Image (cartoon, rainbow, N blue to C red; front, side):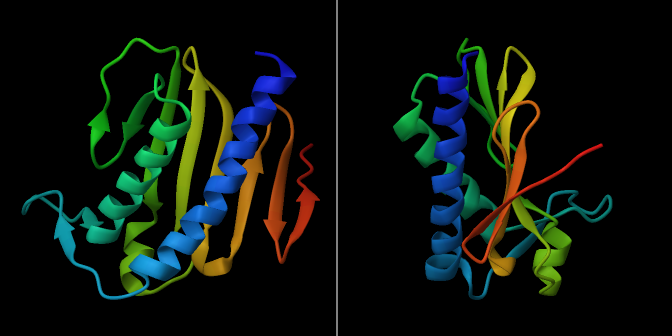
Length: 152
């Protein structure tokens, strides 16, 4: 992939993080229903918010990249042969979400031929997000400031 492609996808995720935070405060920052995915064999919570976030994310991806495959935790996999796959965990940390802890996030990754290309960890309640813009560079965005994340 070329640098223009990385920019296209990372810019999409940056804008999506803003939309996801707005969506949370407009639609989901209220009561929700919790279900147990394990059906009596343990406890794996899923909420109406998980499902609403995933539907919203899928809609945004389909608008911009209609031929790409989407794999989501709540609604499974779209069936197509695209080499691009969006991987969605609409609420990573559902137990924290249910308990009112603000450290849950929306996780979205774009894979190309099975390898990660760009990714987003969006924390709506903390009003910050992490974005890797290519294979070696990532940033944290908080308080309208962008800071490069250093790795050793």
